[in-house]
Length: 178
Length: 161
Image (cartoon, rainbow over all chains, first blue to last red):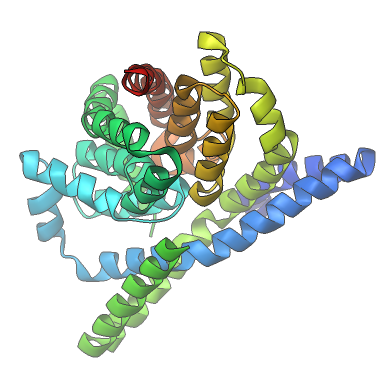
């Protein structure tokens, strides 16, 4: 019970706010509730393939392969692979984090995992096509061209800002998630 | 929507190959998938409730009012903040951004909005924190927030040129 409370405190806190809003401003509350319902539907639609691929990745890809291609010392090739892995995905950013954890657990370098998250967040190919048609080639192409080096630089800076201890903690976290 | 089909296609294909190669391992993979999902589900649920509350407060009209005019750096900052705290799927966000552009919003504001929308996640912070810890999650989001201004600045230059 206590464990349950600890796990769900965030959900419960937000739900309490939602209920309060529903009571005090029903119209606003109902509109919020309908957005949440829409998002839940979206999650249920988008999330299953991400987690299935994550499970298959965890079971089938041997550690040595991950270390070789995305581990420390995988160099430019590792970075390029990380960008590609993040860019071909589809799904919200919160779907990237569990996959990133499996990458880490399998021996990908922290640097490459940061690049992967950066790519997932902003250079996803399906989203790019959407952006291209909605906002035009100038807007979309410029953003893409700034983002590709940007992702690598941000990953470098983020990595440099973390202490050795911080880095170990992240990898420990990933290894604990079973 | 096609992207969802592609992901399902990839997942189903991978599952089928896996199943033919080794049933035991496939079952194990599905178990791991479920466990990973169940592990993060509480955070997901909280995020979705928060998304509802945020988007009800910041609907497209409100966003348009805030960044709709040529509001300079102040508008860009506003756009970046709105992008950071909202969680809108791309197929809703891009047409909305296009509409805002048509209504006279500057490219700089829209670029800041699109960039932080994709790279910065205030609402999804609890999920990120669970995997990467508070410090790393905070730093990543702050860096991405700052970077979005550079993106906005460059896009503004290019679009105006």
